[in-house]
Length: 293
Image 1: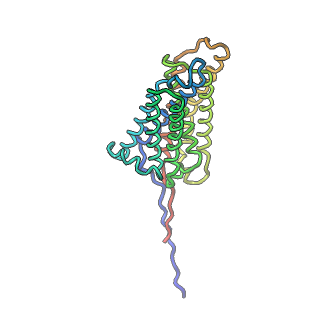
Image 2 (image 1 turned 60 degrees about the horizontal axis):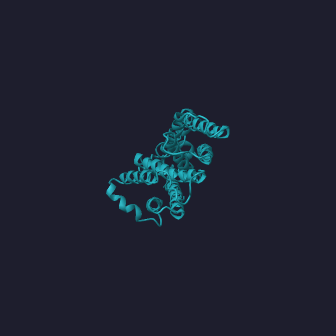
Image 3 (image 1 turned 120 degrees about the vertical axis):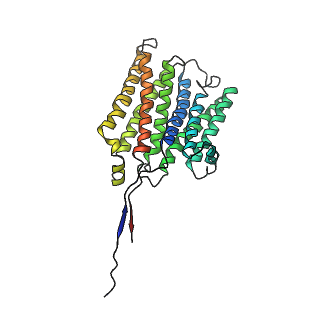
């Protein structure tokens, strides 16, 4: 009688990843907001009627690298000690976290040069670096094969849309305080990015039918979580931006409460923060592993 082999299957249940925690979330929020703020300020400047693209520095030019730099500091804290930050640049040929750091360095250099020698070339270099920074943030998670929720193709697009949206939120807050003037084109683009981000988020929650993905994102699909993220934040901001856009057709001098603009800016930043915290902390589970012996 032939020997019969008994095949045993050991199933390792999904476990919560421990590599990325709150410092990483802070990096994604602050870094994305900083990069998005620069790009949205660039758009605001471009559509401004009395601004020169070549000579006018981007509003609050150093605020963007400060926000992004704070995010990098939090990222080094994730590794244990900020002094280990020098290691972030050692693997830029293969690691997206190094590419994120490198794009921040290029961005900061371009912004500083533009502050002293304003020119469209420096602005373009800074803008491209900021865009690549947001792309790199998305691919940091997307390249993590062990986490099914992160390894879906829409994740990089989410980080791009959320970066633009949170950057618009910073511009809205500054505009409401009277520190800068919003152009009509900026309001329109802010509205577009708010709707794109909302659409991308809803698609993300339903983009995979696998058991691992469904179980990991179950908490994000709770009605209370969806309501908290969408209704009071996304939808309110979209409504305010629509009203503000209508106001431009009525007349540029038509009164509009600055408090509503401030709340709208804060709302989109909170919405993006909740989304990113949800992806990293609530949905960061490894896939189920089956081992046969």
